[in-house]
Length: 204
Length: 159
Image (cartoon, rainbow over all chains, first blue to last red; front, side, top):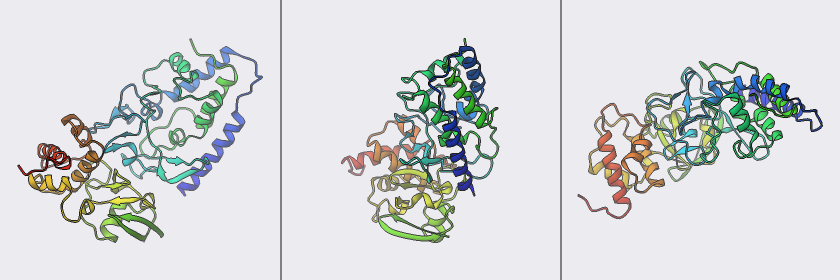
């Protein structure tokens, strides 16, 4: 059943992505773009997003974004953890049932399909840490605009990322005991697309 | 039920079990390998650690389907003659007290040493922070990892 739900989410997100693709000829509207980003910012700053986009070298957890108690976790060069403590040593391809059980998300295969056996769970790399924690809306907006700081994503790829990446989608299916962001995923994608389609201006 | 094939301690293995059944329980119940222990069942304590393609994964939360086509090593498979440097160091320094957590401790230690042949105290503390021991054998675990490093790098003469 969870596989079916995950596949449906993926298909719906892909459709959303296609319908939300940037319109190259759309007129620039800085006020509308900045306003849309300001709404989407509430999602970026939610613990489901911030916990894997921390300022430090370790992932966070919970509604109050605390370190994993007792575990001396490190980002590692590729964001996958180090030595005995790699993210996917505990996190699986789907959420484990029950409160305080490890959440999980599926890997993505080269053809874009979901691999429901193997997990995808990691931080951004050490080279491009894509920090959200503590960023103002203006700072985060400029960071997301900059391919050197956003993982080399074009605006089209940025919309694709927020539309279809299993780790992003997980934010709205985080498992028992975890809150979800203040916008629906559809609303969030729509706001990111609105920001980009209006010229991607940033809030002051 | 689903048929799952993998290499277990060097031998081709096939089981037919529920696809979501945790690897831990397949090892213990279906394959009779009871060296891997059940501790918390929440991927916190580290008692259930085994290697999957070299990574120290927590078998209590790992669905069996994840290991399809992969290499799984349990504490029984570190060596068949107690010659693995971690086994030798653990015996030499008499690390365990009650012993319940020790298979997980040894599997983490072996994973660390496979990637870092001469870890520092700090690197050991980081790598072993996911293995809890209610007897408090942490100092002996650290000493044994240093000793296993010596054995593995050819400084194996008994002290």
